[in-house]
Structures are given as C-alpha cells and as structure tokens.
Length: 204
Ligand SMILES: CC(C)(COP(=O)(O)OP(=O)(O)OC[C@H]1O[C@@H](n2cnc3c(N)ncnc32)[C@H](O)[C@@H]1OP(=O)(O)O)[C@@H](O)C(=O)NCCC(=O)NCCS
Image (tube, rainbow, N blue to C red; front, side, top):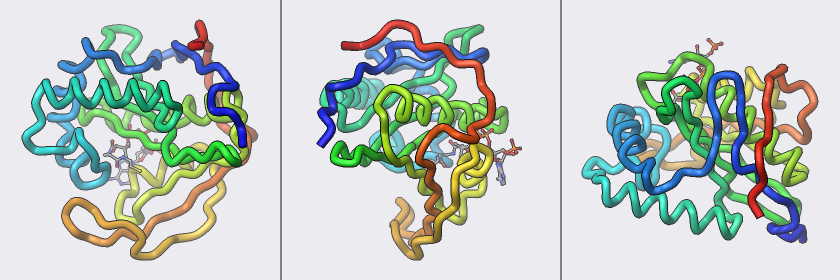
C-alpha cells in the first residue's frame, strides 16, 4: 500500500486561464453563488451537499471544512479553479474513490453555469490528472459519466481517455432515474493535449 502522505501535493497550479487551489472558508460566498446558479445541472448530475435546494452559506462553510479535513486525510482531494483575471470561482475538480493500495482513483468535475462551454471542465480534469500521475504517482485514473450527460462524456473523450465499457443501471440519480455509466480510463499522461501548467509551492 502506498503511504497517502508520501508524496507532496501542490498548493497552487497555474494555467493560462485559471489557478487551482484548495477551497478555503472565505470562498464560501462565491461557492454558494456558483452552486445556486448551477443548481439544475448539479442536482441532476452531480449529487452531494452542494446540490441541496435549501443551500445556505452555513452549509457551504461546513462543506468547505469537510473538504479540508478530507484533503488532510487524502481521502478526497479537491481543488477549486479560480479565474486569473477576476479571481472568481469557475468550477471544482477532484480525486475521489481513492484506493491507495494501487494507487488509483476517479476524477470528478463541475463548472458554474455562466462559465460552461468554454473548455474549463476539460482543463480542470486535465490538471487533476496531471496531479494524480505526476505528483501522486497513480497507476490508474477513471472518469465515469452518465450516458445521458454528453457534456460530461465529452471531457474524457477530449482528453484522450480509453473508453472501456458501459456499466448499465449502475447508479441512481437524485431524481430516482437509473444511469448507465460510461467507464473511461487512462494509466499515464501520454496523449493528453498540450497545456501550459506550473506547480507553485507544495503542501506538506
Ligand atoms: C459537464 C460539465 C462539467 C461540462 O463543463 P464545461 O465547462 O461546459 O465543459 P467543456 O467546455 O470543457 O467541454 C464540454 C464539451 O461538451 C460539449 N457539450 C456541452 N454541452 C453539451 C451538450 N448538451 N451536448 C453535447 N455536448 C455538449 C461542449 O461543446 C464541449 O465540447 P467541445 O469543446 O468539443 O465543443 C458541466 O456541464 C457541468 O458542470 N454539469 C453539471 C455537473 C456534471 O455533470 N458534472 C460531471 C459529472 S461526471
């Protein structure tokens, strides 16, 4: 088993359009606004605390605190992407279902409604894959997308993942619908499209 704390994680990851870093409590207001404007898509396709209809600033603060704890434990490693021009939150990218035995995990992502269809989810998922392979030395990464969510399925396709199969009726959405899940995998960074990226600083 790989020691989850063996490798350092970057504190900031800069790309030409945005910088990724951990969420912090002062980000709660921006995150609340992003989640509220994106509620429909998040509720349908994402799930979790941010999709609740009665989301409040207190709940978002609690969510951020939970994420901090999970990050410390290396059980759920999530970064926010912040616009380089105006500092606004664009979206989130994460490693979840991490199995340090292999080590392997899955990538999750969402972008706020007003910033969709600009290539951000693809770039965010790209950065998370680079962290997984270059910093954490993962052996395997997976992206699972519902067949009914083509915008999400486009991300692993654009990033050159290998399409494996469809797990039929494998997950239940918030609305009770059963989803068929496409399984996309990659085992290294080979074939990722070019992207300028810089790691600044490291977290102990
Ligand atoms: C899915 C999601 C992350 C895509 O975010 P995004 O920032 O718009 O994604 P990108 O711009 O990087 O790329 C998406 C691709 O899908 C395409 N796309 C967008 N909406 C689409 C749709 N309704 N049908 C088909 N393709 C679509 C885009 O055109 C783009 O491809 P292109 O660059 O070749 O044109 C965003 O819609 C979202 O947050 N949805 C809700 C949460 C979610 O589904 N998360 C993923 C769970 S696995």
